[in-house]
Length: 197
Image (cartoon, helix red, strand yellow):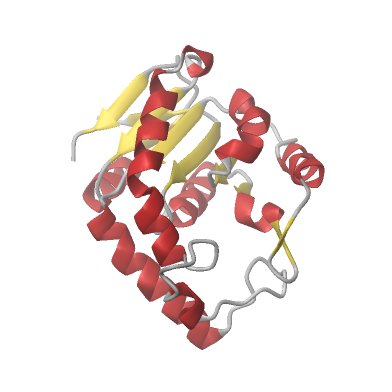
C-alpha cells in the first residue's frame, strides 16, 4: 500500500537518525528543494546565527510552494516552519542505532575535514569524546537528550496546535526503507500515523 505525504515536509529526529539522508532522498523523489536547517543556523567559527537572521533564512528557503526540510531546532524556530508544513516525519530510531552512526560520522568528518554547509566549519573527533561537555560533544549531547527529546516529540504529535499536520513516525531503518519504497507524495488530510517496524 502506498504511503501518502504532502508537499511541505519536515524530517525531525535525533542526531544520527538520518534526517538529512531521508530529506535529500525525499526532495529528489518529489522534485522539490531540500532545506537543511543546520546550514541556515551555523555560521563560520561554529557561531550560531542570531534568531532573527535564522528565521529570515528559513522564511526565504520556504518560499517555493513545495519543499523538504530536515532539522529540529524546535525551541528556536518551530513557530516559523511548522505552521507551513503539512507532513512531519519523525525518525524515532533507538539509541543503539543512532549512537554508532554518530561516532562513525564524527570520525569520518574529522578524517576528511569536510567543509560543513560551505561555512568553513570542520569537526574534530576528539571534541566529541569530551563526554563531560555536552555543548562540544555530540555523543554526550545525544546520550543526555535522547529520552527527553522522544517525550517532547510525542507531545507534539498529540498537541492540538499541530492537528493539521500529518505525523509519520518511523522507528527503525527497516521502517525508513519501507516508507521510501512505498512513497506516494500527494496532499492528504491531516492524521497521525506510525509505521510498525
